[in-house]
Length: 391
Image (cartoon, rainbow, N blue to C red):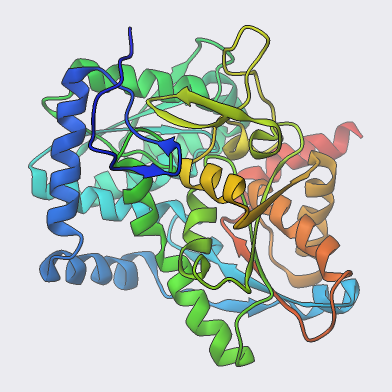
């Protein structure tokens, strides 16, 4: 399918990144989606309903937990954990899923499609669809369906149809390809509930809007607990939804370091170059022929060759730092947080925990770190069991 640049009047850009590189028919769908989002995001009735589900269904607000044992073991800075793992369905993904499903409801759409890597967005979407009585189709790379078999069963239990994608590497990128293909074919009766802060405008802005609740809460919580803003906010970065949510209310606080942690095996922000992928421009890992490079991470949710356009801008403008952590270090952090705090983190979140452990040692005791614990590790326990057994 030939992609052409469609004018969107410079909306949806973060510096040179973002935009909308999609066919004309699909652009009309994005224009209507943007119109509806702008109409409802500040609507008192919509906000009231969204806040109701945040509290009564998702279980917000969740705690900012002082990781006292881990802090003592590392020495140096205090480590706080923003507990997105305590949300209903076990990750930050449900924040955005509820926000978008409420938008779909107002648009009168009954068929929902989504992509998923680690399965958490798929579970969140299936959950929201079950709650609101909507048809749900989830595209997931075949390799990821095998790595995250328990989440596949969860989605099916919730009434979703999970479609394994065998094209390409059978991973997250390929699932996004299939979901976009479905939308092109069925845009008249379908809402694409995109899970990360990626894709053509208005998705990156919309996902950030619904995930910004993370930093809205943590900013107030840390001021209550410490009487000051954190030295740094740390979050894992794949597509970038949990990280942009964790950063949102600190972006204008120039003294707060924003640190995104990506897998060393898929260092998009560290090694990527500006390119168009999935209808938007971002830093992208490319192979020698200029195509998106095959990636691999032990955390399926970080296994993506692109990244959100706002992260690309935060990187190139110097406002945020992006670092890499190996799968081995993440695996060690997964085990250590479990043993020291009784909290089993998702492998995605474990990358952020691993870097926080490293950074804490370099800082003073009066420094404060907030780690966004984007999800719980139940989904990864079987995978980690086999990985450790093989060793």
